[in-house]
Length: 359
Image (cartoon, rainbow, N blue to C red; front, side, top):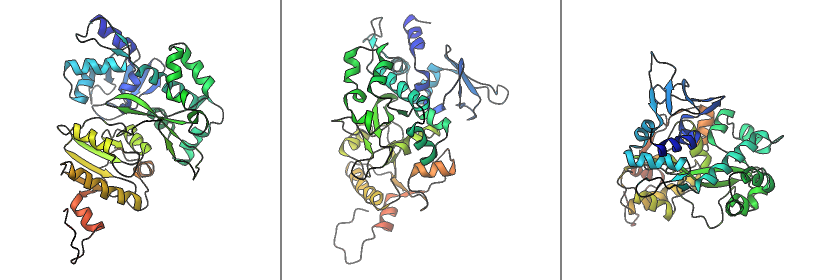
């Protein structure tokens, strides 16, 4: 094995790389959902680079992390190398040479691990209670999601001191914005193109005077957890998208509002060569329907035509609630209708209406 690749494997954040396989730490190895048969029978040793299914006679899945990454994302050799390096906290030079330096995502991953640990170790944690009792997430789902709890400024600094400089730690939004350590203490990591990109804070106790979620100051809200894929499902809530990802539904991304923003539309347009089908699944309420209408108009204006709209059973407020109650691991039971059928149903045009038709 080449020295640089060996270094990447030694530093690689295996849990982050394989998040969609729901890695569960079990001593010296991870238990995984097998990419081959879909059962919780695969494993990966902490010092290994091979994913192996225990069901050798029935399944026989055995692939290296390299081959799994290349197959999962459709990468060539260069892209696979860069993807693994990024999750190892290593930046490559132009020629993938020996000179390396730590990637900024390394600090974000360290902070995420510290917050995730605090979620389960702090006594009588309101964040853990909220996820279990209010959101009805299982412990396995909570751990797989990477959600954490801000342990407080001093405790977080102590957790990061060993591997990061004071300057790095001071610049971290979880340190610089006190609201994360006081009110918005449920810390939700979000990813872009497979790598951790930042955090969203959530109120645990509802406050009608405050937004439920908070991004770091001056952040343009992205299409959260976006990765280029042929079919894109867009939901409102970050927890909707995160629970879908934990369940193995890989193409669900969050707008974090009830309609697409200009920044999010730019992301889809920039990936038009990959993104061919767009499915909207906003919240099951009047605001969600209004946002769906607005988003359809924006998407049509940018040249997207394969647009469908999903509608949940009235008893479910959003995708997270649907997944929590049904325990589904796919969206196959949700009907997505063509946008023009949805518009005809929810925004019928009167025969005397002189407005230009968009159907």
